[in-house]
Length: 95
Image: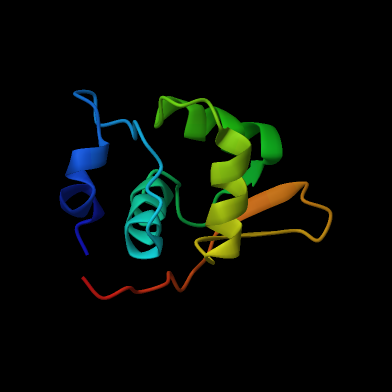
């Protein structure tokens, strides 16, 4: 699924997310777009997740995005939140 195309109205000229959509479906697409910035099979600390997210959005709320990526099952994590990784089976949403 081409999440970038689906969220193009929410991206700035540098393809950073400038707004976090309110509607559930668009929110899922925006999270799918951000999940595409993570490397498969790489493990990330919470700090690394936040740093990556800060590069790809402009509204300064990496914590919310991190939690939403986990809640929507794009990312998984250790129970204590110390390590995150991209889910092998990414969620699929109808467009």
